[in-house]
Every structure is written in structure tokens, then in C-alpha cells.
Amino acid sequence: MKQESAAQSSPPPSLSPAPSAQPSWEDGDPQALWIFGYGSLVWKPDFAYSDSRVGFVRGYSRRFWQGDTFHRGNDKMPGRVVTLLEDREGCTWGVAYQVRGEQVNEALKYLNVREAVLGGYDTKEVTFYPQDAPDQPLTALAYVATPQNPGYLGPAPEEAIATQILACRGFSGHNLEYLLRLADFMQLCGPQAQDEHLEAIVDAVGTMLPCSYLTEQALALV
Image 1 (tube, rainbow, N blue to C red):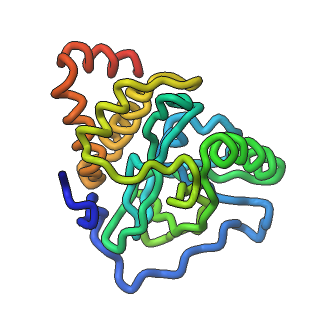
Image 2 (cartoon, helix red, strand yellow):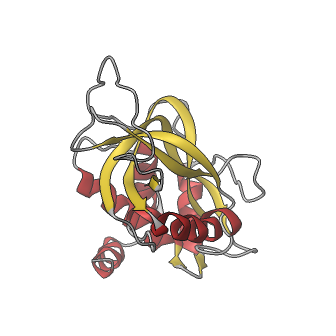
């Protein structure tokens, strides 16, 4: 089992000194907000937004430590989905969405149900670094599952997590789809985007299923 305290990803070279993050709004518009997604939000936000940027947050690592009894599992067999773990050396890639005006309330209302009520996540402000402009960080809202929520499963060997993912399905689909879509997103980000925890789980799944099956599943997501 890999040491969880180790850094799991490699961001672009650190910018020193780091500039102060911009407020959540731009152009003097207090009704604009950035929302950072690092799990299913990277491919399925399901809310209206004005802009989106791929990038990363520092000081956090992504972990499949949150249980899901609705979207990717059920009460008897909870699925495994991601949350953010505070990690001084960590870096997590994802997508930030900008919502403006009426989009703000609509997005927050929708995400409160999807992430908080059904998922067990709390909100947290993070500093987001756009891939195309890392010297212009933004303040964004992220949904994070902490150990205090009842759905939290915590750490487990990657092989055990892979086994659980293969066995679970919820209202949003199979837990394996969630894993593969997230892995596909990371590949699209380029070689600078690394997530050893995610890669180890994908590798473990690969040892449990025929290569042809994984290929068919990946093609089905295109």
C-alpha cells in the first residue's frame, strides 16, 4: 500500500512569490462565482455557466475516500467517490466553472442537493490556478467531504478500493464509469497532471478485468 502522506501529483513549477488570489467575482460583479470541480463535475456539471477553465489547486490531494449511497452505490453497497485531503505537497487538477447573475443561485441550489444533501459534502474556498494562466489564480468554491460526515469511508488499499468500485452501481451509473471518466480527464490535461492514487486504482482494476473489457468501457464513454 502506498504511503498516503506522500505527494501524489506534480504541478507545474511553483511560482514564487505567489500572487494573491483574485476575488470570486470579476469586473466588479459580486454576483459572479467560480466553482471548482475535481470529480464528476469535470465531465458533468449539469448547471449553466458562463466560462470554464482547466487547472489545479495546491495543498490538496484527491482521494477515493468518500462513500456514495446514491449516485454510484446504495445503502448496502456504497460506491467510492473522491474528496480532497489536505496535503501541503499535494496538487489536484480539475475544472473551474464561472457562474454569473441568475446562474449563481441556480448552480448553488442544484449543487446543494447533488453534493451536500445526497453526497455529504461541505463547501470550502480554494485557490485555483488556471492551466493557461497559473500566474493569475482565482478564488473558487469547492465541495469537500470531511471525516465528520456519515458517508466518509476513509483510506483503504488501492486494490480494495478497486474491488469496491467494480461491485457498485447507483442512480448515476456504475462506479467504474466514474473512475474511468476521471482517469480520461487527467489524460487530457497532459503529462504535467499526475494523480498516483487514481492511477494505482485504475491499474488495480486492470488486473481484475480483461483488457478488452476495459477498452470497451473506455470507448463507450467517448
